[in-house]
Length: 153
Image (cartoon, rainbow, N blue to C red; front, side, top):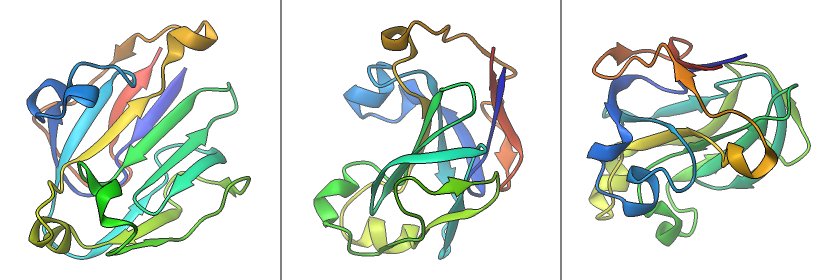
């Protein structure tokens, strides 16, 4: 069982409500989105584990059970080519829950014409033969970094 916590402050919303077809249809995996507080800040690790993949706007952490958790800041932010983001971890680095991952400014993301909504998902678990059942999902709640988002049972 993996408890996944909020990487940043904001309101938890269903993936189906974010308008991005890849995330909203669960093609990447199940999870939630967070409409973030509109202030510069830092996204933190939602689980303990090893950084498996990075981009200026996104990080995948694989926990001790081999489960990948994607934290993706904003929608279509890959098109910003890293502008407005500061990656604070590297591939292969061990991280602990709450450790800073990426510095960013959601207002700057929106000023660049992108959505600041962040996605936290469990990566394509069926591909590696793992259950995707989420429990304790807190959609509609206001969260701060470290608050529980869901449990991957």
